[in-house]
Image 1 (tube, rainbow, N blue to C red):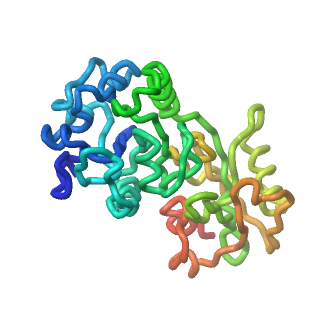
Image 2: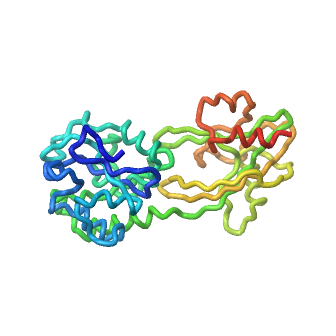
Image 3: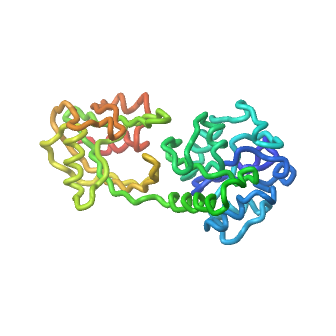
Length: 311
């Protein structure tokens, strides 16, 4: 995804980048140079260096060297205009940014200016991390680096670029989950729904391990709170995974252990307000439902994990 016939400026993209910067659209200077933020009065490249993203100040013509540092650049709109004020609503393609995030899975999309974000999502953001996310990609809004934004002092813009670099390093979180199977071979799952995007997925019961808790203590607490389960034995760890994801304006790197838990018939009834945890439902799933889910299952290979732990 390094070139695009719709744009005078190439996309600088790759899979699994730490951060993709999203400008609003190519200006005439950038279009002529076929390089992002090529206007010498634009502070983007200076800010990248001063904030510690690059070992030196890159020239716009060195833009592809960003990939070696885990960084990329694209635009919210492809059409070249004299100024961003000349853009129309139809110039923005939210589906493209959504597809980019889900297919290439950058850790963060950093919008360079509030208007770049607003053009895509139709929302007026505040600077900093956003509650909205796209799949496993967090969203962050920076001040514009354009000379038109000169009223915002350079040090203030630098402060936000440094904040992004710090935020991009995920918080470490330990978690424990229960692969809870009943006598009929059903698995107990909870449904999460993102409060902004509406994305929904089903996952096993469990959650974060609080400071000072053991895995067993944390899992017993989670199963009691989310499903009303109190009488059960905790089996061995049958699956482990590590993944990075945004949640509530935080970026988390979560290390999870899945314990096998077998129970007899049980009606799942939460004992806390699960809505406050982003959970909208909890219920048993049959094998047939797992084979043809109407919504996403997490992890992706959940069916295989269940099959591997049949009696």
